[in-house]
Amino acid sequence: MKRLAQAYLTESRWFHSNHIPTVEEYMEVAIVTSTYAMLTTVSFLGMEETTEEVLIWTTSHPKIIEAASLIGRLMDDIAGSEVYFKLPLLFLFSTLYGCTYLRLNIFMGWESHKIYV
Image (cartoon, rainbow, N blue to C red):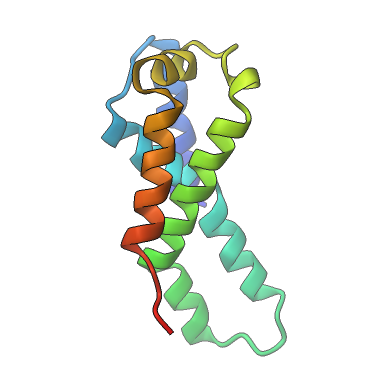
């Protein structure tokens, strides 16, 4: 929760100072503000057989949850681009890097975190 509040504060600072983050800066914060990691942890809390070990694992930022957060956030950015164009920061980001770049990052997120059964 503390990490999420800090990420929201960072986005707010960017917006109010008209700062355009680098792709790396944006991705670092966007993964957190997507709230997918928090949703995963809360989902485990709702299961009957969840152990303390599982909760510790989900809060240790495993790569699979980070990848799912990245993919989910980028897909959301692409799908909601009409709404986001009203915000100067995301308008500039999408203008500079475009949806093709976001789609490439989604693909790379899937490729780098494949789980082979």
